Image (cartoon, rainbow, N blue to C red; front, side, top):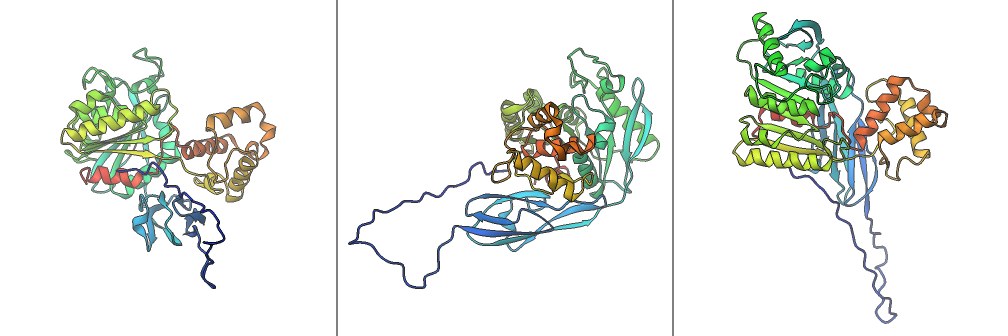
Length: 411
């Protein structure tokens, strides 16, 4: 996908004023304008923008029983991703109007139980719709767990979209997360990508054993297409898992995978990166590596996609997305950040969520609105800022794109 990396500027040339050549505008001629109006219904982003500006639009918060269905407009071709809850476009020389649409989400409840893996009991969350089209394994990042994944709002939005599209979902965790032990001595608690061995590597073996359990219970038909979606270390594991077991497709968020996987995989792989990823294992080099890997895979005649989430402005309702904060509370926090100079004139956050957290921890009383929130609410605010600045975090901005890749990776 071609991403828009720059915005065309307009260069004004002022002509020298000589009395002998000066011409007056015709009487009654309309005044020229370089800005036009954007109107957003059921969402945010309305305002006055100059021609050539990058304009971000966002749907209003979705309830638990809603999924985003797309943007309706007289100018659908303007939008970079017309079916995503958050998208953007380059402002044309005319007024435009977009309406966010939703549809009822499929009703479901994630089941939880302890199931036997290769060596020990594993926590497993799952949901199997009637006649599922495939199984999607969702994989947490470093220091994560199955419980933390299902509690994450961005993951919840993806799970909701997957189930709505008739996919079964299975969520478990790395063996190191279950045992709370750094089994390979690499200094982190996470999935072990190496060795690429489905017998000696317990993480690969656990996926096989748990899936067999569900098939033996006749909850899943044998031969059902399989997919993996992971974030960070889970993204690296997703591409390796998809390769080793020859899944139909794999998706990695904020992880480039390795060039060896790109050279040997027989599975279509998609990379969803964050433009300003600050993770020391990713960053600009990791983004470049993900692009290179996607190109290598495509060059081998397989399907691959590379996407980058760009930074976006905040809007006053952003912190109410999950329902943890009310709209007035969200606006109060937004205005506090604005007044303290954390946002520029276009409401782009000027720093990072980590920097804001440090400022807050150093002097909580200086942030009365933020300090008035519960710990969970504050963490959600920091997470949404991290997403707005396009840092290292699971995101739902490409949910529909990911669904399309799982369904038809070559289109």
